[in-house]
Each structure stands twice: as structure tokens, then as C-alpha cells.
Length: 161
Image (cartoon, rainbow, N blue to C red; front, side, top):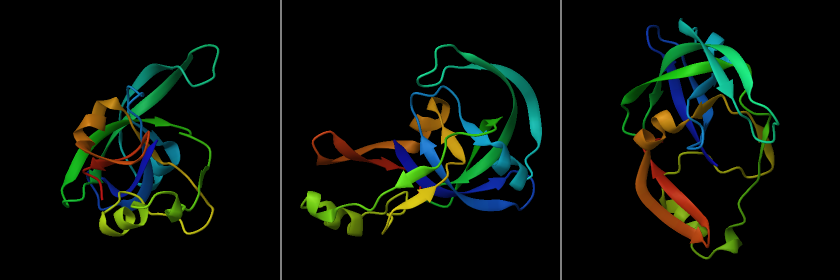
């Protein structure tokens, strides 16, 4: 899955925060954690009832969720306005591993010469995902540019930092 770090903000007041997000073209909607929505002091617009089918689940789950608007900063400095459904949690902690630069000859070159949308950990670290960008905004953020690192592994261009 593609991750990125970017600045997100309240649409009305100057509440900003740098967060990690997950890009998921398989999700129909965009989601934000309750915790981040509270920290940014986001106003709830409407309440919706949505049906979630999660990986490995036997049955769909119905959830009442509120919709909020927020801004995400793109790498050109422009902010993109998005709507997101508020959920208690998007995923558990994600384990980020350092890259083995010797796996691929041009990996070190690419990592040193491209502006990546997320940081590269230097040691094993645990992190949280605060926003999941679904297919409703995925194609507005991901670019056509793709670089093959090794068979089946690609770097994708995006409008994020």
C-alpha cells in the first residue's frame, strides 16, 4: 500500500497537523480517525449510515458515521479540499522497516534523488495511519508516473510531498 506524510488542516480555523495517510484505491470512500478529527476541531456536516466490508470479515458491518471536510497540502503548496467519514480507527499500528538499499542497484540513487511522499525509516518503527484516501480522491492525487524498482514493485508519482 502507498503511504505519505502531509499537512492536513481545518477548513475554517488554523488547526494543522502533519499525519501519515494510506492510499487505497480499493476503498470507495475516504476516512479519518475520530482522534484526528477532534484534534483538528473539524465540524461534522452530516451523519451517514455506511456498510463496510473489511478484509477477512464474514459479514458486512453497518456503521453510523459523520462526514467532515478538511484540507490536505499537496507538494506544490496548494491545499486540496476533501470530505472524509469519521471512524474510530483505520488500522492498527503499522510496522515500518528500513529499506535494504543493496537489494536493488538503483534503489539508493532513486531514494536520494526523488522527492518521496513519505519518510524512509532508518530503523524498525511503529506508526499510525490517521487518514485513508479512498477511490473518491485516489486518482486526483496519484499521477501516471511509475518507476519499477524490481519486478512487481513500483514507485508511483503523486501530488503529495
